[in-house]
Structure formats: structure tokens, C-alpha cells
Image (cartoon, rainbow, N blue to C red; front, side, top):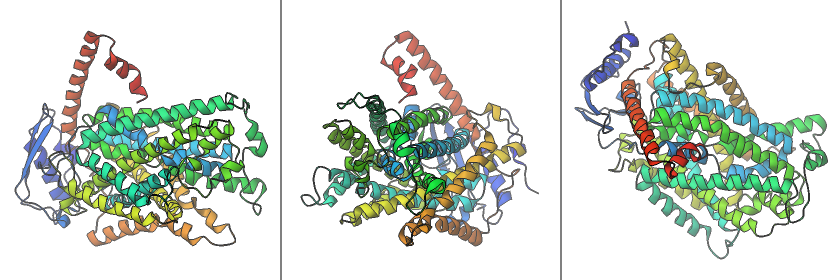
Length: 608
């Protein structure tokens, strides 16, 4: 007979750390008597005042012995522990900075050419709604008990096989993204310096050395660096929105008041082709736009990765999630709305960018600027694109190493990748991630732009599969909470819509994943390359899940058996400690008066 989890945690008084661990051992030994090592005993000494947790382990386990366990937030020795050095402002900015990239600056041009201004606006708004529900579900789980990545949530709340599938799917995505961004950086620089003068491999090497240096020195420096880079990106986007608004009202040098002119002529929706016209053609174009809006939002789920290195995730994660909806409205919807008013989908300058994958020359924003008669800004904008690409590459390498680390902690990758440096950096995982950056050198040929587009196609599928998994895990998490009588009113953050919002988002995420590259079937010639790169993520995901399940004979965890308590007390105490520090901070702000710290907390903290 299995031990009910509630009976294991009925004590209201704080227990010592070894009782926490014995509960953990007792539970998992009953769940998996064949796989759980009897000799393994880990004793955790928790000092929450100093935020340090030390452990010792009498024996180590093989990966096979821990297949049915999950990644716990503590219980790691000094050689396998990350540093909790990310503040609330770091988490908040990394969340939005992770998605403000080339997909928004460059990809919106292709979306506009494909579907027209209104089709683009609706697609971005709808995908933004799905993103919000996904982020809200992730935020509720991450603020309850923060774990080391998506694989840990899936393994703990659903099935280790699902944790394995999403862990490696997400890892493949972030093995591809850093070299893809390095290629993008080289293409951006070609706006000023042609490939005939300087080989793109030189720029790739320079950028790679810099981002490796940033990732090596520790998460505190990384978080601070990304905070300022993301702040710059936010300022650029706010400036672009203001500039487009001025151009739309006729404030440019040509004083042409555009208004809704392009919504009437050539129209709000574009027909797909001369062969598919009328309402059918417009609908096909509208659906085709979803793939571009999907790529623009990819990376916004980074909160689930960085929360394990946050100082007080019960505070920082909810704040980042709540700000997401406002930032989606401002940075995405306002941008695509104004862009559709300033540039027509059949603009000759816009059509001429079709063969250019990167640099300011490929951006629809530059088309709007040039059409208004402004001459200098394109070069400035290209420099901004370069910063966006650099920031994306930096955060992508970080996520790649942390995801591999999470797999190792969860027993689904070699334990060597769980080792960390004295700065809390998983250096072996980082080294392997850097080695994959060598793929960027394959793209120094003249066909790099085409290869870049293929990479974008692959990444989009891996991205939406991660959203689908987050929603599935949340549905099981919510079901377990209801089965075990957990009161969500005491949670630090509760997702709006709960399971109903998750079901809604899950249905449409699956639908978009299936139809996102359907246009390959509409032409006279079947585009097999786009088809393969667009859907390769599906068989990788399914085979990973099914293969692990067949080999290790795992089963979906029953709702009454899902562990919703182990190490929760650690974060309860950490939350209390965070409240005490916040109270001290409030008193300090009152005593110091309205200085810069007060101004940031009251105003800028809601933007940056």
C-alpha cells in the first residue's frame, strides 16, 4: 500500500532537514522499490538566514537508479549547486528580453508580406494570448516549488518519460539557437562590411569569445549584464513605437499623413497567391502568418529556467508573469498595429527585402523610416539589431547550459554535466553548449541566409512543443492539487483561468503546431526542405517520450501520489525571509526619502 503524501507532512511545526530527506526517501522507496537505492542517504543542513544549503551523500547513484526521481531544488553538494544571485528585476527583464529579438524586428516584415496588416495583428494578438496563459501556468508552478528546468516539472508532476522528452527537445532547440544567432550577427555586420572584405567567421569568433566570457563568470554578472541589455532593447522598442506613431500622423520629413490608408489600399488582408484568391486566399494567408508570430514570441518562457537561480522566486516569478501581459500589449501589439499602418504589404521596398534574412535592410521598420524621408536612422537601427542579436545569443547559451544541467540533476544526462564551478556555473554543460556553437561556421558560405531560415523553422517547432508540455504539466499539477486538497488561495501566484485557460491554450498550440507549415502542400512543387525542418521536432519529441517509456517502463503518476510537498518548507521559510527583507527595504526607502532607489521601485520597476 502506498503512503499518502498528506500523512507525511501533517506536522505544523518546522521539522529538521533530515526528516525532510527521510520523507523524500520513504516516499520514493515505496513508489519505486526496485529502482530506489537503499544505501543512499543525504542529509541537508539548511541555514535560511545565509541562504546556504550543504549536503553530504554516502553513495552516488547511477543514472538508471534515479530515472524515476526528480530534480529537487536543494540536496546538492557544493560541486553541483547553482547560485541564487538573480534579483526580481533580473528575472523580469530576462523574461521579456528573451523574446525581444530578430523575430520581432525582422520577422514582422515577412508576416506583413504574407498576410497583410490586420491578419498580422490578429495572429500576434492570438498567439500573445496563448503565451500569456502558458506563462501564467508556468508561473504558478515555478513560484510554488522552483525546480531546475522544464524536465524537472514534467518528471515530478506527470511522468519521467515526459521529462526526458521535453528536456532533450528543449536542449536541441538551444543547441541550435546560439549558432543561429552567431550567424545572424555576422549577417548584420555585412550591412556595413561585405563578406568579401572580412570573412564572416571572424565576427562569429569575436562574438563567441565575448558571450562565453560573460557566461563563465557567474549568474550574478550574467543577470546584471542581461538586465542592462534588455533595458536597452526595451528603450529601442519604445522609441520605435513612438517613431511609427509620429510617421503615421505625418510627422516625418515628407509630412505624409498615412492613417489607415494601407488598410483600405491595398487592403487589410492579402490573398495568398494568384492561384488561391478571394476569401479562401485571404484565410490561407492569415493562417500562414501564425508561424512568424510564433517565432517572435519564442524564448519568453525563460522564466522557468532562471527561477532556480532567483533570490526569492515566490516574489520575482509572479512579478515577471504579471508584467508579461502588459509588455505583450505594448511591445508586440502596438508595434505590429503601427507597422501595418506605416508600410503596405505590397511596398516595393518591403518586397525587395525578401531575399535578405538579417540586417536593417531586411527590417520593415527601416522601410517605414525610409518612406518617411529619414536618411540617417537605418544605420543606427542596424546597430540596434546587432545588440538585439548579441543579447539573444548570450541568453541562449545560458539556457542551453542550464537545461543540460537540469537533465543531469534529474538523472537523464551524465552526472558530469551537473558539476558547477565556484561561481555556480555548470562548466561541463557550458563547454558542450559552446562546442555546438561551432555549427555557426558552417554558415559562412553564401547560402547562410537560407540555412538561417531553415534553423528558424526548426526552432519554431521546438518552441511550441515546450509550450505544449508546460500546459500538459500544469493540467496534471492542477489535478494533483485538487486531488490532495491543496488550497491555492495561499499560493504566491495563481494562473488566471486555471485548467480551463490551460486547456484552451493547449488546444490551439497543438493546432498551430500541426498546421504551421501547411503551405508546403499548396504550391505546384512540394518544398520538402521546409516540410522536414518545419516538422522534424514532432518525431524527435514523440520518439524521445515513447523510447524512454518503453525502456524504463515508466507510468503516469497518479494525482494522489504526485509529490507536492517535498522541500516546500524550504521555500516557505525563504519566502518569510524575503518578506522580512522587503520590510527592511521599505523602512530604508522611507528613511532615505525619494531617491533613485525609491523612484525605480515605484515607477521604473514596472517597465524594466
